[in-house]
Image (tube, rainbow over all chains, first blue to last red; front, side):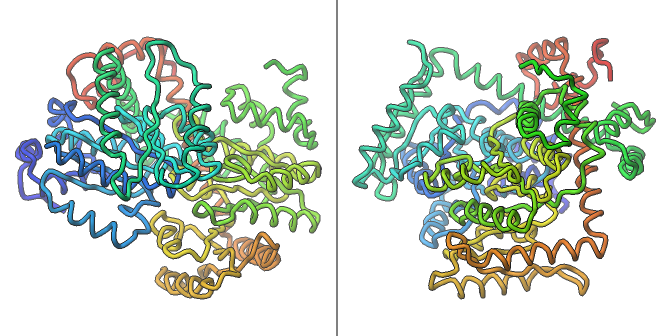
Length: 319
Length: 319
């Protein structure tokens, strides 16, 4: 697809919040369009104002309804909200309840809300990086709150959540649920826990179990202690408290310098990913691909072949 | 941990199938012990005899019971079977039903069965690579069948399944389940479908729906057409048919050269990953890490910083 508007205008249009340009450009970022980089560089001075919230948890924890309700609540408070959903089990991206889809369509008519679902398939660990890039674009476009919604399984999903300023882990009172979360590494990354579907009879017991496992976490007097918010997201119950907790965590991070530290860390990680990708593109010249195929056909160990390729001089490799 | 036996004996012990050495060495591979490479190189001439089966599917599809029953069936046919479970929702690695755990412990007493669960957390996309390395070790140790069990969500999980010769996608007759599988990219990678819990009343309808969506797949006269096996894995029903289908797919791949092609492809991908990792380790010298932190503190775009670092000359970088 060729765009009729010049690239320089494009960045400006995005910063002004032009919806159609925004949506189109995000598609280019998602597809891994290498030319998008020039525009991303232009957008960069405008990045850093949005607050990023990650919502994760096992399938069936009601993450999408939670995201939905939270979006509406922030919106009513006058915030512009963008949602990046990376979740094959979510109504945004996967098997959907029709009702949820329609509700999301209604939301989509509001100019102050932007929803983007991203596929979980893609090139070599590129998903997390792309989700961050899309968030940067939305940040530059003036969205105040960016919500990443993702199922808490798999490394790339965890990477996405790590790109958030505040991470919410949603659980349901199902037995073993919190154990699963622990095993999947969700316990350590949570700033806030949500016990969703808290109208169930077994909910108090589940909250207690979660509380005791939280007490096992290392913490100092200054460190943030994750709280547990009880919600019935389908009825909108507990969403106000959740928003308050998010604001509380934000204030905590802003006061003690944690936000700046978190973002600096995020940026250096991002730079490392860019470097790795750029190097890959430059390294795999036609000559090297050819040499790889030649060597792989011989009875060598892959480690030996790797060494040989790293020592293979290719004049076309201009790094 | 320092090992008392010399490294040269270690490779031999693994090839002879010494269980304790095997388990210890796999731990080293999992931890990313760089010295493990020398031994892996020694093992490599013995790699390539095992047949690799991937089992994936949405949470709740009964993958672990299926893996369990299939393991027993192969075992009874005299095969040595190794299971690599990478699944936070599985009884092997995650929230477990006690019954399953006990059953697995019984299995674990059999010398002809080796079970290893791998955490889904780890360094930068390294999980899939490590799973392949662990499979190579088990292959060299003389296991005939290696089963990868993983939940079909997330890129690294898909990468693991791609490392299999035959890929099984397990589904249950739940509505929307097959749609989810489609969205998650599982439909294209399946060589065999399992409709598990096929004793449910809605199972025939689900099989029909799956059949019609399969007809949309591109295929030529020579290409493998995925079949659908109905199982009730908890009762062991359909497991024989599943094993027959696996053998059928294997025979198909061996006849038309597909197995060799698949394995060649897997090897070149593996070599590429080794190269990328080696390069990363060599590139990120102390001086470059320092320069990264210096540059990241300045108001530059991450793309600009990446360029500068790629041009940063460091005498300590010996690639």
